[in-house]
Length: 128
Image (cartoon, rainbow, N blue to C red):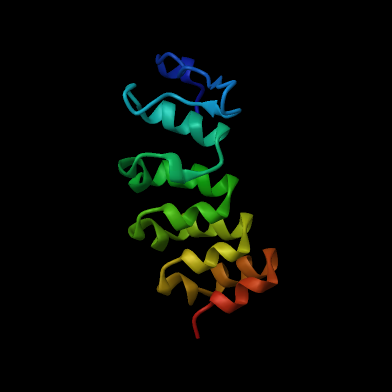
């Protein structure tokens, strides 16, 4: 991922800390989000759950999130759960992410081996 300044785009507003709740706040939905902002969030926030649905269908965004937390595959659109590079990145990071892969990839030997190597308990999610 290229830094925002190389793309000619201003970097997104950094998170601010809310003293009442103790949580960091990120740019709100009212602010304009572009791919640079969403990819920045992927590097600074773990869950894809907080990302707008339209971005969960973007393979670049989902790939960045599953690299950080394979379990984020659960929140990706179904079409991307069948994308081999995305699923491979997810199961390499967290083998039990195999649970959320498409049925075709649950039967893929390379995917299953990567998942089981990372976490032996992933075998229960493999197809016959």
